[in-house]
Structure formats: C-alpha cells, structure tokens
Image (cartoon, rainbow, N blue to C red; front, top):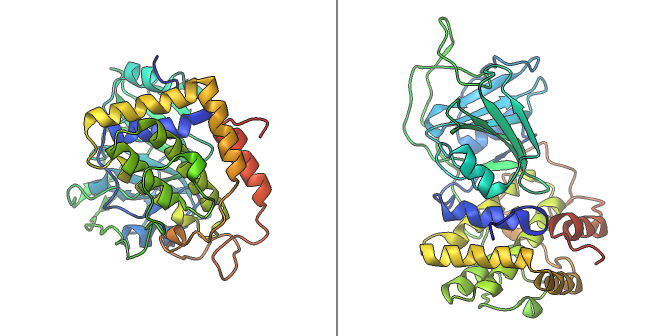
Length: 363
C-alpha cells in the first residue's frame, strides 16, 4: 500500500520520507520561522545584508536574498517574515519533496494537495499547497515540464540551509516566479553567511534510554530522549518500536515548542528528526517507513498506540534541551524566567495534539 501521508501520522510519515532522500540538518542548528523579525533572521544567518524591494503584489514587502544558500526571505511592511522561498542550490527534502522532483512522483508520495492553482505569472505552470502538519505548510511551484522548481514556506520554520557557494554581484530577482533578470535590477554584494553554532547541551538527551516500548516510556523523558531511543531501535531492527517512539517524540517535541516563549527553538525538532536517520542504511530506512505506514494504516495498532499515549499524558519536565537551542531574541511571546509561555493552556494543547496531530479521537 502506498503511504497516504494523510490524517493520523502525516507529520511522522513526511519526516521519515524526508531523511530517506536528503542530507541532514545536523550542521545547521538554527531556523528561520514565519513571523520572525528582520533582526532575528539576520542574527540566525550571521549577516548584515540590507533588504531590497520585493517585486510582488504584497504592499511594502522587502526581501533578504541568500543566493549561496538557495534562500530568499520575504518581509511584510511590519518587517516580519511572511514567506520563505527555496530554489537551487538548495537541495534538501521539504515535507518529502526536493527541487527537481517530477510532479507525478510528489502526487504519488503525498497524495492530492490541499489547494491547486495556476501560476498568475505563468499560466502554463502549476502550484500545489500541502499542509505538512499542524504547524508547517508549503507551496510547490512546478515548471512547464512538470518539475518542482521552487518551494515556499507558508507557515512553520525551516532550518538554515548550508552555504553552497559564495555569490557576488548577483542580480536580485525577488518576485515569486522565476524570470529573466531585468535591466536596472538592484545589485547585491552578498557576503558568505555563517551558520549558527550549536553549543554543548543543546538538543542533548537527559536520559540514556535503550530501545523501549511506549508502555515503558515515562512522561519525564524528553523529546530528545525519545528521538535518541528511536535511533537505537532502528539500529537493532526494532522498527515497530521505533515508529511508535518516533511519533511520540514528535508529539512531545511539538508540545514543548508550543509552551516555550522563544519560537526560534522550532528548528530543533527538525534537527532531531533528521539525526534519527543520519547514516542509517537504505534498507533500514525503508523498513522504518513501512513500520510508520503500518502504524498509521492498521486500525488496531493505531488504537492501541493512542490508548498508550493518552495514558502517558503530556510531558512533565522543563524542556531545557530546546530552550538552550533558542536564540533568546526580542519578539518572543511573553514568558517567565523559566522560558515558558505564561498562562499556557496545557490541557487544550495536549488535547489538540492527540486529536489533530495523532488523530487519537476520544482520548
């Protein structure tokens, strides 16, 4: 059966697919998120580059080009990120798809898009929108020959892409569709950006767990603990255990992101997920994906898993593994000295993750 990547374990399935076919984010621990300020993005990227006018329909919008990363960050009139564009040389998978992939292959992988529309600039081209999970949504733009030519992050975050090659005196095109460079386009002398460095303790596990079942998990085990335990299961060919731990780790991780005031921590989950697959053999990757699909598609397995997660309950620890990963920049939601959101509705967020994330209805 082809993985549907819809409903219960959509986020988990896409994450597994992502590290089946691309480089990891292990060396790029910082992230850019929709809603970030200009100062946040510049600090994450390690640049002081000036913004340039964006040639699109959004009034007052500007852009920060990073040609050597295949990255273009768009800011609205309040200087907040509202869109992120990825083009070559960017080469990693985003929600399972990579630049250059055929449209048919993406349809077979992800199923029908939530929205489909022709390009307003190029009528012979098509755009698809996918909701990767409850946080992340993307737009895929295809060329006339049905190849993926551009990826837009519409919501969520993206870890900082690695520098591929330094570019200088590049003609800037900041419109939403590829086009030939127009005469008089602004010129940007683009410095080589430096990715943020990951300090000791960031994203590190606090418990040295082996490959365990969900029944053996305690609510004091962090998302980082569970991702590391997932990898141990995969190294031991315990793929069913690994699939359940991976789904639970993602749920605990997303709960932690919601309750942390500093939203620059969000890219940490992507790093942890990708590290699970770093160096894994192709056979084990395929077996892991099959186990993830089975957990999603088998009603009995799904029901048992939901009951176990509901009985376990939400995390009962301070998520320092993610808090220490954040940049602590201005513009975060109000938080206390512990780094957590004040007046956080624990019950509502946990219930949403069970019902909307894992599709564990009635728990």
